[in-house]
Amino acid sequence: MPEPAISSNFSAQLAKHGIELDGPVLAQLNRYCELLWDWNSKLNLTRHTDFEKFVGRDLVDTLHLAELIEPGERVLDVGSGGGVPGIVLALLRPDVQVSLCESVVKKADALKRICSELQLDVPVYPIRVEQVLSEQSFDALTARAVGSLAKMLKWLEPHWDSFDRLLAFKGPRWVAERGEARHLGFFNTLQLRQAARYDMPGTSSQSVILKIWPKDE
Image 1 (cartoon, rainbow, N blue to C red):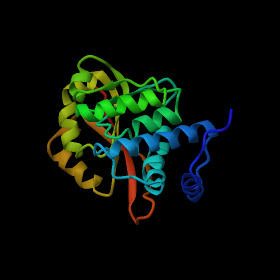
Image 2: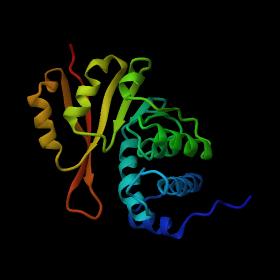
Image 3: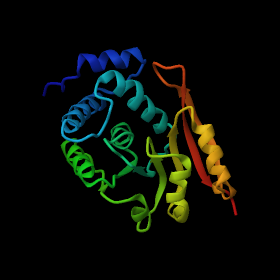
Image 4: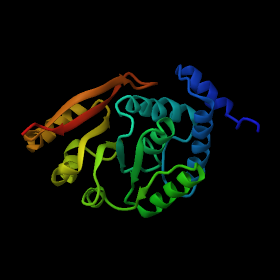
């Protein structure tokens, strides 16, 4: 069978960022973008509608996240939107059990269709994360462009017995958000560290992935 086509624009952006991945993974990522952007014409799933932004922001972010996940771990992507980082992580790391949580039902339906087209065994929960965590447990939660640290930690406060750690993507404002969350008392029982820090392509800013988990009793 012929190899699935890879967009020349996709290949050029991968080369620009020095990213090398196996051919089948690249083909799946290319197909994911096609499906996402088609659905985006019907729903507002993403603002990243070209390969430059997909590679420079979405793929770069998820590659850094993938380094923080152990084989076999159960990961719930909170507020999945268009499927970043959840679907991208599932394509990069088939050894990880990824689930998606998207409370906007139309978006969740689109995610289900995209996962089906990609033949991914990735559950999609069309409900709030609090409802998912009241019934299931996970090793890690991921969150990207979901809300401030204080807002997320308020949602998650009653549910830390259902997951081990939160991995949250943040930009330069993360220090101020940490200060707000600390002022509200969330870090009386939680601890935080930077699990990853890297340049945000095309800007003078940096992105971080924050690891947040309970303090030892």
